[in-house]
Amino acid sequence: MSYENSIAFLGPAGTYCNEAALRFAARLGIDDPDLVECASFDEVFDCVDDGTVRFGVVGKENSLEGPVTATLDNFAFRTDSVILAEEVIDVRHCLAMHPEAARSDIRRIASHPQGIAQCRRFLAEHFKGVSTLSVASTAESARMAAGDPATAGICNPLAARLHGARVVAESIQDNPENQTAFALVGRLVDAELLRGSRYKTSLALFLRADKPGALQMILSEFAYAGINLTMLQSRPTKKQLGDYMFFVELDGSMHDIDVQTALDCLRLKLREVKVFGSYPVE
Image (cartoon, rainbow, N blue to C red; front, side, top):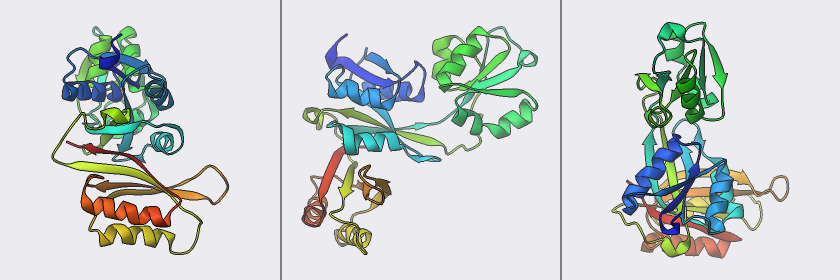
């Protein structure tokens, strides 16, 4: 495996995270990436942190489910890796079947629980009364469908192609606006590897003490600087009950004067301002 071209992602092959990894590889100019399958986002971070791979890809936020807390917690509490870029993937589920199966052969529909939940209208209309089976990933459902004429899978077209299943219906998700943002993570030395015309900055804000007006004080600094916040979420610090911190995502780069000013003011008032990265978005 070539370290320079190595990218860890949440497996198995054919997940939306796999699709994002391929897109990041193209943006990095890597024609033949060495893709490393991981069982969890924690493992992806570990592979980057211990030097097993140069890059990792993790889920960042879903338009229906919100921020991915496992990713946020890693950035806040476990890793020194930073976000190098963001890629937004349209969630376009398809129905995959055995190459020689007919729809009348289907006795069960397999997918990740979210995949099943996101396609309920399609299933009710076309497979009423057919049982559903929850599996570990949408990619696993494609593998099952390719090997069993009685099982159909809800997955993305990439998974169907990789596992040899036949796509019989496309874009079967209930919500056509469903999207997931993925983050390319790596070491700080690669922070300027990708450039763009538009940037986001992600950070965690840790309070000195929980007191009235703390959130208002934070929001005021960004408002005074004219900075648009695209995400704000409170999370436990995992130290004691009632001790919280804030995740923030904003439009702009930490190299922008207005962003620098706001963060410098917050550093004077907060226990810690931890920046996860300023990165280009497309």
